[in-house]
Image (cartoon, rainbow, N blue to C red; front, side, top):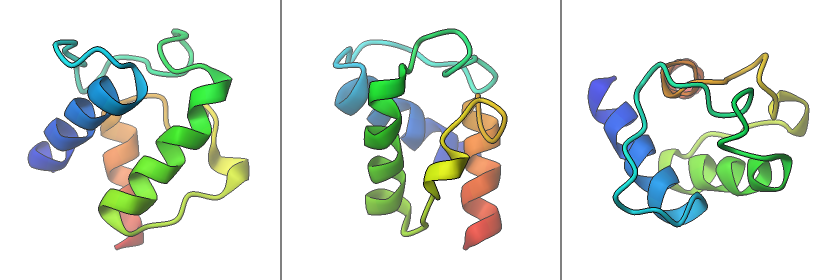
Length: 80
C-alpha cells in the first residue's frame, strides 16, 4: 500500500496541483484542508480510474469518504 500512496502523491502533485516538487504526506488532509478543491475532485476521480482501474462514484467525492492518501489507497484496495 505504501507504493500506491507514493504513486498517488506524485500524480496528484503533478497532474492536479501542478506542483511537481510538492510532497504530500500519507495522512495529510486533501479535501478538508482545501488542498484539493471541489473543481479538482473530478480530476482526482479520473486520475484514480485511469491509473488504478477502479471507479469512484460521484457521491464518494468528499472528505468523508477519503480525505487522505491513506484513505484513498484503502478505497482503491477495497475495490480491486
